[in-house]
Length: 282
Image (tube, rainbow, N blue to C red; front, side, top):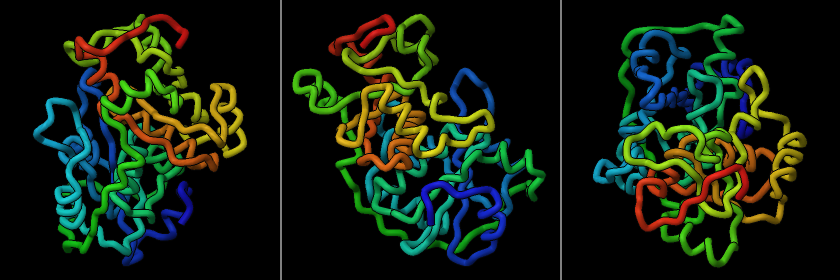
């Protein structure tokens, strides 16, 4: 299965016994919209809801941090995912939060996972079938989780990188948030960016219909940001959601897997002991 699958491919595959489809929609606090309510109103037939806030470390004060392998294993099994399942994830916006579920499944060792290119927005534009209401119950799967720490970074790693500069840090937030000219959506988080980080808004990897740029166009955009196939990359954003769109883009472009700074600006911008920079330059 390719990293990106088309709407036509997914419609043809619906009903396959080994296929699990997830709606992994997440809305920012400022959007004041319920992803689960929208899921119950309209979803791809057979889809299950991947709750980014619930499939997370409940003990962390930060939003939707990565859970333990044991917790992730339990939650995926309860959602009917098995070690031999093919998983396709989408979100209601096109491509915003689906990449977070894609990255998390890969983080815990599940390789057979893809993103629906263009998401529910494209699916609906093409008048493909939908269902509504509460989803049918599913049989538990036999998922096995093994954490791949090489794809994850904590605040200590990013602080150490300020000195070593071993990894290029890409910030997926909008330019105004990166520069510190727009307010952060979470209380107690100051504006700005990590010193030395490069702004590459995730929207610059998308086409008008919400699909991802082709591989060559992605490579050109990453090259413009100073990233090539030999770069080691950490991706960051507001809370570890849109950073994974950059991780997805790097993967599709054929580059080495990026590591996600899970706490992202929600952590860095809320702490008094982290250096911060404003303006449009790294």
